[in-house]
Length: 177
Picture: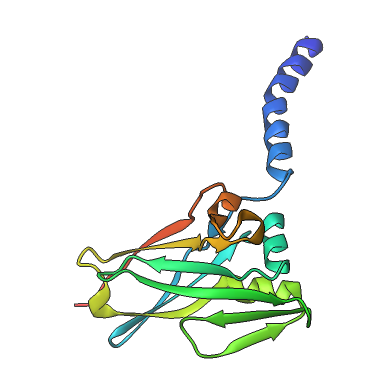
């Protein structure tokens, strides 16, 4: 009888162990955190984070000096988007990050800080009159195509590095009456 129980236990546990091994191998899929929403007078402020957005290949492209753009699209009445652009200065060994939603530039030598800054989209302003009548906002993160020298200046779709997945979240906005 104990032999039968051992056999059944092995059959039940094997798929669980296999799943754990597969999930811990390689890189984790890119995802977008659940957005944090703050309503103030005539605007909504949205914050979210890209998780696992920097694959090994994407980091190599950044380190080559090729500018890379993370684009957060917000499906409003007029389709809003904001960008975080990362460029690596090969001479100064410096990451230079610019933002479409604010005027400042951040420079750092620290790769962890660079990843954190580029991945965080904070207090993105969405005017209330831009919110669709359904009250639903879909946000999606993408990478803009880049031109690579070895491709003779043809566009390279960086979304291939995310297996063509464009992580997204939908939030429902409830207005007070």
